[in-house]
Image (cartoon, rainbow, N blue to C red; front, side, top):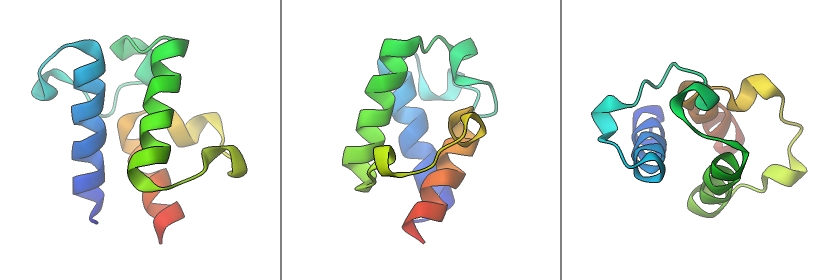
Length: 81
């Protein structure tokens, strides 16, 4: 699984949650500015746990680890390495 494919999957999921085209999602923008409120962010994190088989509750995540799609993709890549 490459970093690009992780980012593409995350972008697709965020686009689906927001009901927009994937190419309209800015991967470097903070998730909350994209329209992910706390409930939608939880939905996104559940997706990450299921899709990538990562238990985020066991991880010592910082706000920066999940701030943007790019950051979240890097976090996933580190956890899967």
